[in-house]
Length: 316
Length: 85
Image 1 (cartoon, rainbow over the protein chains, first blue to last red):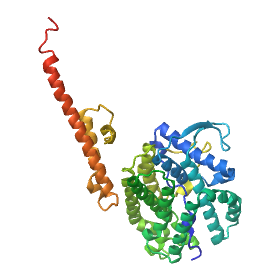
Image 2 (image 1 turned 30 degrees about the horizontal axis):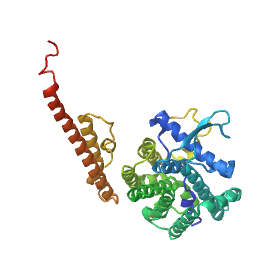
Image 3 (image 1 turned 135 degrees about the vertical axis):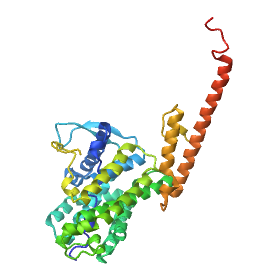
Image 4 (image 1 turned 90 degrees about the vertical axis):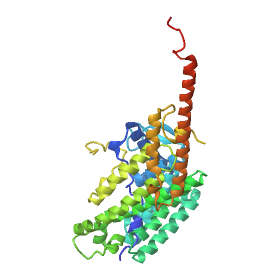
């Protein structure tokens, strides 16, 4: 197996996105303000190049933490480097948003390190060198998060090297990675709510891992990479489309069950921005599940919210 | 105890029909059947208790209002006065 750790290399890609067409304008504006908030926080603290690592999952992390921490955020109307002529609302003074931006730097660093180690990808090495100072800066204030990420990734590597043949077992360290990150960013002392936050974030992590595994089936077959679905469902060089169709129903059941577990926790939590998180959980992620199971990869779909990219986009 | 209107997620002064509708929806949502084999079943049970208490308190409040209206109605209502005479 050429590269056993690709799954973790795909950390936080951007699966957890809202269904924009179903959002109220004020919800969309606020979501976008969080997006710009995370982006600006990354740019301000670590330089504009780090903003390239921004994705929907890290925006969700900032938004979710800010919501469960019931933060009073302030909004400022600002232009930015990607769109200097048009001002947009930006979430400011949010420790959750800053935390999310820090975590994104750590995860991006590990992803680049992984790509360099396993594929000898020179761009990854270059990227890693560029963000190394930012990474060093971030871990000064996030020692626990860095340690947790490192330990979770090590568990992931072990399972992948053992060619773990169960998607549930293989997903566990990644789910735990997300659970631990959210736990570190959650500032409430309410033990009961903490249980629900843990369960929700664990299941969101599990969902990301499994959907990413399904999304990458074709690529992993071509590159001879580890993918738990290929082992669990005994891929034997058959046509990729036929294989995906064969396993689709079971993977779908697992994904929907995981989302239902996350939703059951969400319903027990008191939080701000409830309608936005509800949209993401019940509509955005459901839509993403269906589109990826139908073979429409999120990696081709995801677009930045920064520019004028909405021209011609469908909201269906 | 939290504000019962907040627990049932309805506006203060909601009608009895609105209270009943909200209660019914919440009971469905947090019913033990929905949390079978779920590590959060205990939390859901507590939530359901809180909802039941809030519902009972709003029903009592509504009942009290009705009986007080009836009492006031008997002494101050239109039946016993000659307002228009």
